[in-house]
Image (cartoon, rainbow, N blue to C red; front, side, top):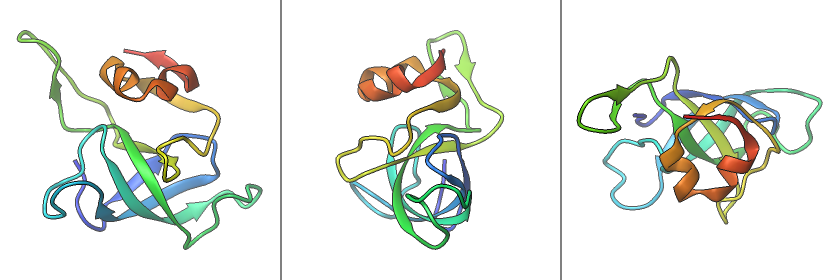
Length: 122
């Protein structure tokens, strides 16, 4: 879960490395950004070879992993080591062409493009 001014790692190949959350999109802005939700972010650290994402540019990010554990069934919960996101455009299509690391199956059902770009689906 992320709140205002949280730092997040970007795990796609769009060029951004670290971003800071500015605002939650959809619903009340008082809540936290959870997995599968979109937030407005500003790029804090980027790869200089990419032309799409420079430092201090504003983008949208979709949170795909979180340190907070989520219930999968009645018996167990899933938790990741880091909170990670990918950059998306206004139509919720990704800016990058590859996602590093595992992605939940529930997110692949909600956003079909995640399943095609990710290498590992849990």
